Image 1 (cartoon, helix red, strand yellow):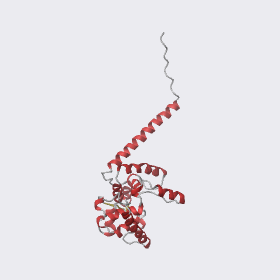
Image 2 (image 1 turned 90 degrees about the vertical axis):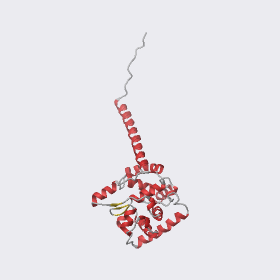
Image 3 (image 1 turned 135 degrees about the horizontal axis):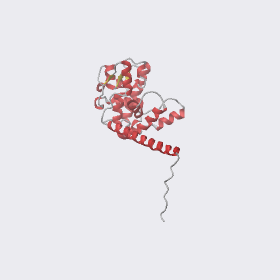
Image 4 (image 1 turned 180 degrees about the horizontal axis):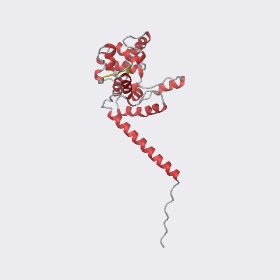
Length: 238
């Protein structure tokens, strides 16, 4: 006698909806990660070009100054100065300086502990301003650039997209703007003053420095010399 077959009972509509939502959420996340990884991998060798913030400033100001230069055409002391100023342990972490983060948490300060890698992610791929979404995306993409890019590449990209004055982006435009010379010709003092402009370049001047900026630049010069001596510049030097 043949057994009777009954159609499988369908799950309730709300269960099916949850399953559908989970599948598409997983698909979206995986696809997004693959796209991000592909773009980041491409920028290991291709220059990122004009960033979102540059476009916003160009729209606001009418024009901006920006010229990409390879790191070989940037004075080595400039690279050391910006690392000393922004992220002295750059060569010793994988994108997040946990020691600096712990100090901020323990002190209860409101300032951030962003590394050079995190700042590069923000400047190249994200937008300016404070929000949990931006910080979450920054935290997600930072390990990706650390995985695909060399430390030297991160410094190169950062120096080429950082803002040094209103409408002045990248170290080549900054060197010409403040000192009428190329990035390759920057001295230790000039490099330290440019690094001291960050992260508030619109309120400071490298060519007409205040006493406070001079003091900060002197500290950066000492820091740049220190990281060269103790090996903390080795990961991005020739």
